[in-house]
Structures are given as C-alpha cells and as structure tokens.
Length: 453
Image (cartoon, rainbow, N blue to C red; front, side, top):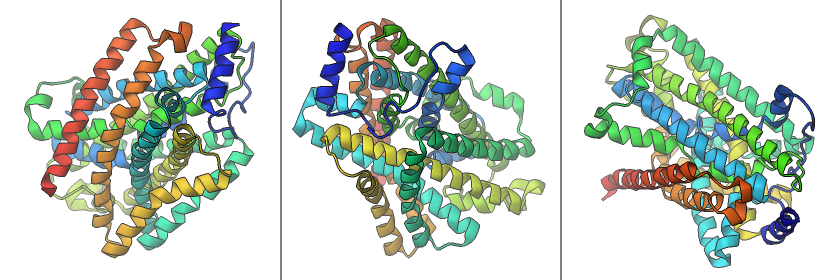
C-alpha cells in the first residue's frame, strides 16, 4: 500500500513521466537468466557513457598525455570511479521515485527556484552541446571540406534524425549509440596499438602520485580532465532514461532487480568510456610527448597524425582520417544525448509541455546559436571556434554542484527512497566527492577566467 501511495504522489508532483514518449516502452523478461536480463537492461548506460567520452574530453586527455606522458592516467581512473557512483545514484533515483533529477529538484524547491536552476542547467547543457557541435562541424570540414558554418547548420538536422529514431523505438537509439562507441574504440585502439606505448609506464600511470598536487601545471590539467569527465547533464539524463524499462513499481523485488541491472549496465558502459579516455591519453603520450608543437585543437591533432616530424614513421593520412571519423562519431553520439537532456531539464524544471518536434528544435537551437555567432564573427577560423570549448567548461563547473548536491540529498532520504536509500558509506563518500569536486571546479573557473582580467 505504501508503494502505491508513493507512486500516485510522484506522478502528481512530477507533472507526468519524464520523456513520456519513451518512458516504460522497453519490455524486460520476468523469469529469464542473468545474461538475457542484463541484455534487456543494457542501453541507457551507453547513452550516459557518451558524455564521458565526448569531443570536449579529447583535447584535455590527449594534451595530458603529450605534456606529462602517462602520469595523469590515475586521474582518468579516479574520475571514472566517481562517475560510476554518481550515475548509480542517478539511475536509482529515477527507477525508485519515477522522477528524474530535474523533476525531483523542482518538486523540493518550487517554481521560482526551478526557473533559476533551469537557466543554470540549460547553460551547462548548451556548454556540453557546444563541444559536440564543434567536434561534428570540424570533422565534416576535415573529411569532406564542408565549410565550418555549413557544418554547424547541418548538425541542426541531427534533431530530425533523433525524432525519426524515437518513432522507431528507444532500442534503436541505444543500438546506434553503441555502434558509434564501438567505432571510436576501434579507431583509438588501433592507433594506440601502432603507436607502441611503454606498457610498463602505462600501468604505473594508474597509481596516484604526490606530483599531482605539488606540480601546479599538472594539477591544472588534472582538474581539466576531471571537469571534462564528470558532467552534470549525465545525472539528469540517466535519471530519466533509466525509466525506459517496463517494471512493476508495486513489486519491490522487480524494482530491486531494475536498480541492480541498471547499475551493471552503467558500470559496464562507463568502463568502456574509461578505456577510451585512457586510450586518448596514452595516444597523446606515445605520439606527442616531448614535442613542442601545439595540440590544443582538433585540427592540430588531425595534422599531427600525418606529420612524420611529430609522430615518426607511422605518420599517415589514414591515421588522420580515422581520427576525424572517430570525432564525427563522437559528435553525433553526443548530440543525441545532449538533445534528450535538454528535454529532460526543460520538462522537469519548468513543467513545460510542447510538441515533441518543437522541444527538440528549441533545445538544439539554444546550443547551436552561440557557435553560429562565433563562426560568423571570426569568419570560420577553427582556432576561434574551438576556443569556445575552453569557456564552455565554466558553465559545466558551475552546474555540477547544483546537480550533485540534490542528488546526494534525495538518494540519502529514507522517506523518499525507502529500502533503496543510500548505505551510510555511500552517503559519506558522495558528500566527500561533492565537496571536493565543488572546490576543484571553482578553482578551475578562477583559472579559466583569470586571464581575461
């Protein structure tokens, strides 16, 4: 009886289910074996993992390897473990309460604060989208010589593609995302393999060292890797798409099974993201360490892979093309998840209902507009456009505490979560992570904006 009451209360205050067109649309087997059940629950984790390997991560990871060789691999590992905990909490919140993080936050804060939080979160989603849009547009220019402005405009039509895919079913979206992740993994796996890294040094790099704290420039880059890895929009997205599976919320065992397999799906996919981010850093270390050439832009990396003076005998146009293909795959993946997240925060914070196509055009347009303006002002110069990436991270840094703090509060609330409330050690660890990341993010904001003053 208690579960039924909580369910009706949630629906009343949440103003309907999150992403209604795909909510509870995927069937899951009731009495199947472990692997068949895991397969049925697999998919949402892939969409979440995309945010941990998007184009915004590439520059920081490769630059980390080129400057400090394999020493920052420990930061990639720690970031991935933090991501696993946060995403588990987000998925659990969605499954147990049937509210996504935006809905739950709006319910506990009210309309006025909901608007303020929506503006902040929407800016963070836009900041994330900027990286994906730029990545896709640059990849189109490198591969097909499409002018940058036209490439940016083409990315708008990704929204229509997503609309079609939604009509075909959420599993189709998940399958496409998994395929694109596989492309990225194969490309960087191959490039790392032929770059012949020092595997002994690679393994040693996963162990933290005091130099991370004592070396100022290393610490700054480490903060950049953490900031580019742990993204606030993923927490909103995961709490929404974890509800795509059909489960009986009146049956605690069914809910418990959903939480268990959602966590497994998330951890498996985030492990894949960890591998890809590791490959990016290893590639930067094995090919570019010791070279003074700038590698702060996608174009720099593309050109370097075909330059024998930089990468030696393995330099080849093929490596450059593969890099651009992976960049395009990453950008396309991230545009799908970015658009979905825009819908989640708009519906959740504003309780705003509008036609599906219009919601997608609005959320996509908000992200594309600043990139188009920048391209027009600077005449399509990649350096100026890619410079947006640096300042977009500021909004992510501001939005991360806004998402982590309520997530920790809600999942630690026994009245809200019942038997699925966080264990004591998870709550303590989550608060430590939240406090530390908040401090580090504010430092990153200061270091990013300081040169402007």
